[in-house]
Length: 217
Ligand SMILES: *Cc1c(COP(=O)(O)O)cnc(C)c1O
Image (cartoon, rainbow, N blue to C red; front, side, top):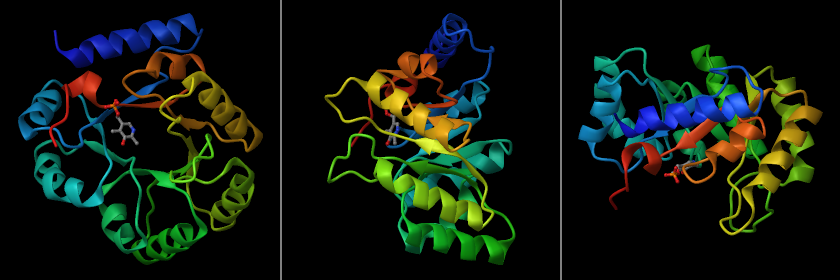
């Protein structure tokens, strides 16, 4: 049995415990800094939802893999610079790191140009950590309004809890913020805490090392 089978089994158990519908949580296998062979093994095993945190790295390795597995769905879960937006919008089906007005404007102008737009998640800095990306909770309202005014496909919210906090508090806050804004997507939970995230309503969990093993580099 592969590690990913065990993760899927744990997700199903957490869905059941939480009284959630089976299959309501999407597992994103976060493949950053993983050897290509491991990614190919997971693809060959049938998994199709993947996440990367850097546009450059994803652009270097995924076009060939997508050519071989055309139903692959790629998600960007790391920070996005304005000058990489065009490249990111061609490669990714979803962007989980929308966190500022300038980026929204850039996404909007490229979307008008190419006639399509990835599904968007606004990253919220739930711990209000100064060095971390994401909008502060009290700035969320303004950014959500701007995205909606532009008719961009806003799906939900994303967070990365501070390393030494209880993640459940941050997941609950993110779920409450999403509810208040009428958003259904919740991108939260990683290798160490995805079951907690499922219990608190995650729709997309981002699991790297627990699927692939330790990262190089
Ligand atoms: C790397 C990464 C993950 C996966 O982390 P693991 O601890 O390996 O599961 C999830 N989300 C983001 C944004 C990441 O950069």
